[in-house]
Length: 500
Ligand SMILES: Cc1cc2nc3c(=O)[nH]c(=O)nc-3n(C[C@H](O)[C@H](O)[C@H](O)COP(=O)(O)OP(=O)(O)OC[C@H]3O[C@@H](n4cnc5c(N)ncnc54)[C@H](O)[C@@H]3O)c2cc1C
Image (cartoon, rainbow, N blue to C red; front, side, top):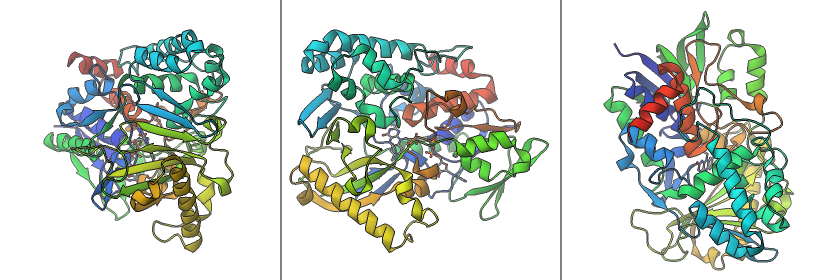
């Protein structure tokens, strides 16, 4: 008789846990509140253009990449469609103040060579920094899908704040800032975020920067097919609002419409703060509950999704970061709302048959939740005139800023859809619209660590708040979580690696 595992939330964390459990002979029952699965993987369409909600820039699918290994183990790698970004320019960073454009290439040596041509006086230092970042990554068994009874890689070096670490290697002040260009991909904070996060993100993307073709929804859909083929279930439009517990074991979970689900085990893929809201406080330690409810979240974003007129805006097979000034690389979140935005990240995602023009584009600028907090008790479509006014004002300024960087942008727009931190909060059920779950801080890392195992004996946690976020971090968390149930992390990692 197969054991049933009820999984609350059908994001990549819940789906990946479900797939891994299927391979072990369990029967996952995934319960998702939205009308589509995927969480950050889900896509929406406007005027025939498919937009990703939270998975625009990926990696790990290259020949020896960790995600290729994981999806091959699941037997669905051939169904995942990715397009590598330009080898010699997967990212371009443009500074308005002196019009400098810096490019980054794929592959460690290529990255070093291309950047060294732009900063020849720092060539040795760039190599030394990249060697150090790669050395840090090598120390992390989880990131390398390597077995180890000891996952503990945190030490004085790996916990050094990113900016301090870079300054140890690089002399040129501008280059010190430029080399922190990707900190918005992990909600980085100066003097706070530990270098191991930067090292993982940098190495991960340098090794295989790519995008999903036609959006990320197909990845979620393929995982659903696998789960259903193994007898599992994915149930949509059911928001779990109550969890019943007896003798430190969950007995059932209950949805808003009253439907009930029971299993031998339960995995929560939802934000731990929201999980605490639906468990009776009598059943959970006060200190644990308060910690999960009060940990700081990563910042949010204002996003403009643009449908372009035919043949009007170039398709860029790279990410374009624009900053008005250098100080914004570390301070983009400390803006004055009336001047917002001062920079952005632009991405055009590929279609199945991509030509030189983009069908759609996404322009993102990181934003504080507090700027829209005033409307936090409202729901999508009913937030009131003042909310709509502020959103429109920001949209207009944002369009003007993009026009400064890409002349003729305005003329190329067919349709604009904007999302605020509240949109992200409500569609993805992400606390405070945070992009990446809990924020990682080198000063209080222990406090921000959330373990997969809980004091409720049959409840396990997974998702971006356990370990790392994103297309790599969340599947790795799922391996940790499912490992707790089926015989350990090493056991699962050996199986995944043996498949190669
Ligand atoms: C705007 C944005 C851009 C991003 N860009 C990238 C990127 O380019 N590359 C990258 O790697 N990462 C990116 N990320 C991060 C990435 O999307 C997340 O780390 C990842 O999707 C998190 O997966 P998860 O499974 O932990 O959570 P989620 O994807 O949030 O899944 C949780 C699921 O639980 C469901 N749920 C919540 N509450 C309940 C409930 N009570 N009952 C039932 N279901 C519930 C939700 O609807 C959701 O489907 C981005 C995130 C955002 C917001």
